[in-house]
Amino acid sequence: MKKNPAKNSRSTTRELPEATIVKYLHQHPKFFTRHEELLPILDISNLNEASVSLAKRKVETLQKDNKQLQQKLEELIAIAQENEQLNQRIRRLIAALVEVDSLDEFFQTLYSTISSEFNTDEVVVRWFDASASFLERAEFVEYDAQVFTLFEEILNTNKPICGELTAQIEYLFPQDKKIVTAVLIPLGSLKQQGVLAMGSHDASRFVADMNTDFLKYLGELVSHLLQMWMRPSFVND
Image (cartoon, rainbow, N blue to C red; front, side, top):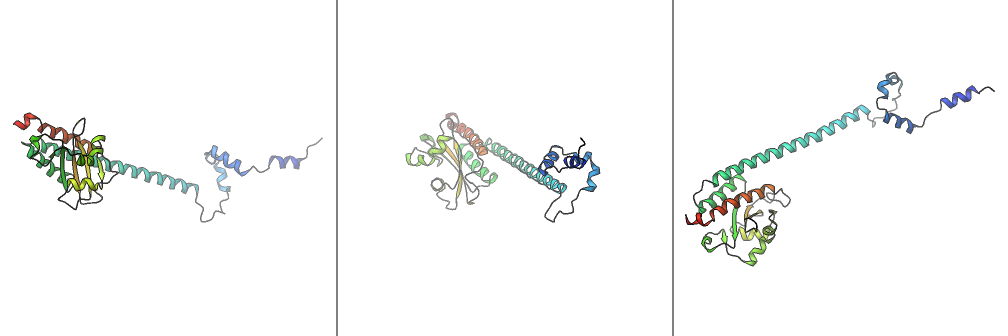
């Protein structure tokens, strides 16, 4: 029995589902590279103005990725430059503080150097539960439970805090009513005993979510140098 040629032709030339073709091309992205002879017969005449060629889409994707990478690189460079500037400021602060000859000069140098190097309007230190020998300076205050509660969080957690710290600002900077934001840095070792505070007239200078890693390092540095001056040998000299 002879096969029907027409029927056989229809069975071998039936159209494949478009989804199957798309899937195949996804799996074989170099198909048209291997079959360049097909490119001239592709019908793309019906593309409207809203359509974008595959090549153009690829270029746009690459440009977007490149822009994102460029922005990330610029951010990393800016962070590195900022860190280097902070390191230089710290070095200048250390160099100034190690040259002082008295506790009075230590505080004068600390305040003036931090104000100029770190762009802040006011700087104060408060050391709680100080011995009587230091009480002649405003930095050293006797223990007061009501005052201590203002700084209990920072002293217990040993973490700097920043922002609009209204109650603390009123206590630390009573003479400067323009201070609106501040950063409080814990001082001392083991059980924290004091704070280094920087206040600013700029509402955006010290914000609650700013990075505090550098501030903690600054507090450790000042704590170490300050406690050297509080040793009996230094005081007696």
